[in-house]
Length: 110
Length: 110
Image 1 (cartoon, each protein chain N blue to C red):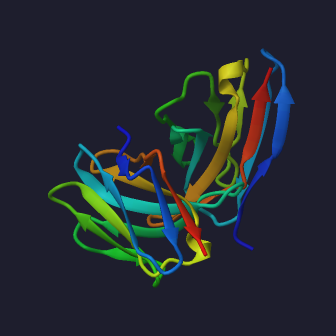
Image 2 (image 1 turned 180 degrees about the vertical axis):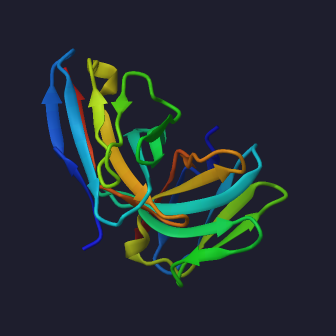
């Protein structure tokens, strides 16, 4: 079942902050975050695992609430290069599938 | 350079004409997947493979076939394409933590 992302779109000025949320109705083993720029393939940002382990880029931060099956991606002091569509992907405990949400489009203006 | 390659990048075909999209990775990953991306629907998994000779259905497998005879290759086969399979297709391979996407294949079925 696809995770639900919110908001669907965000418009920011450079330097502003944003939070993108991802929630699932299923018990999760991990949450992945990817960014896709227009005309390009998605690129890995971060993975958050059940139990607290995280792996990803130093400048990206995220949280994973295991009880609520929710994750949030924090984009602080946004830059023009942050523009793109952000996808969360979730893995459940008992499957090998990585299922993506429908995406959050982020636009950063000067 | 570590990468996932797909061919062709663009393809226009007619209904019912069998086609194959090739996918190859040079990172020795065991896990490979195919996704389709449609506006508003995000990335939806078509098939995945945990290892050679092991494949399983994703969320939207109807009308597609795959094979995994070698670790590096994971071709996507459309035996009888239909217009509703017009989409952007991504192949991906992954480690336990990070998924790498190919550049995408834009398929149009008329």
